[in-house]
Image (cartoon, rainbow over all chains, first blue to last red):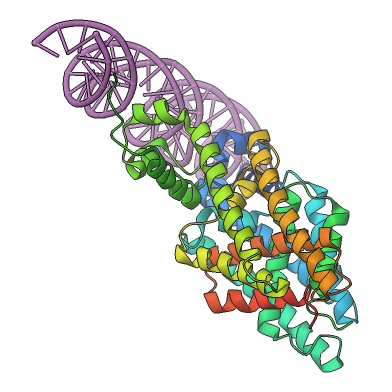
Length: 194
Length: 194
DNA sequence: CTAATAATTGATCAATCAATCTAAAATAGA
DNA sequence: TCTATTTTAGATTGATTGATCAATTATTAG
């Protein structure tokens, strides 16, 4: 007994992610969102709440997808070393797919630091998830002798995430895919036994 | 034959850097700048031009100081490995000194990507400077057998910078100094011969 | 066909944005 | 002391910000 929505909530959210990724929270205006999402102003407020709510949902969705992709690639190979590399390479491919689009997660940290509790909660949750997955594979690799003995899994997880961030910013700064892959390969030297 | 300025240009600029570092370009309003810089509105426009000019000068100044600090630490030790570590550690100390203050350089890349020619020119210049310095030390280390044979200097430079970025974002995200140092040590394993 | 419900459109809100203009205040040289 | 010159301070600009209200349109259940 109601009029159906003329737009698809999910595709609208996807478009919002694009805009926020490219321009950040402060750099994105509601008219920009409306044009990109192709919905009316009232539809935005009715469906997603205010701008901040939409941003948090965008960040949450983006982080979940990015995280799950990274983790699934991480476990996609029997070899731990190959899994790590595939994960980094996949991240690079994603980053190069749309150079104008930054990593919303990285951007959110740069913009908000630790000042926003909600942003922090999302990033902490996704960060922990990735870190734990990396740690698990590192422990597996340590047992199997694939990972160097000097690697503490917790530190290795942190290093892996720092590498992801560094690659993303390098990509956003204009680095090429081959440069990024060489950097990723070098980073793996810190973890993988030769 | 003129009235002298009541404020110091340099300290005002320093304060502007603080504000831009914490909130980015879009997140910083002119009233915020005026309050932090402790100058009047007209003084800002007379002395620094518009908001964008002030931002570019802030970014330029910050990048120069940060870069020169990183490079001087890089060459502060006879040992290449120790120089690299000292450089990373110094970067960590700076980042931890004021957790609320992000790296303006990293933040600018996240905000503008490659869309702003001026921002890009500044970042490219400072990035190249750092990268070349790292490459020089890596070559020195390669000759002396301190740096692992697999390290291409150009890639090593890119990796070093990616590590700096990763550390900065990790710090901004709330990581502790000891965590960061462990990550830095691990990163060095990719470069230094054991 | 009608009534109830929900989504859309357009007008509009106060607040804030960056930036400019004007006029008062203060210093230097003559 | 007087005047030229520059820096301040205050008022104000039009544009844009995020957000809400009222009215219209469309759809489905009964």
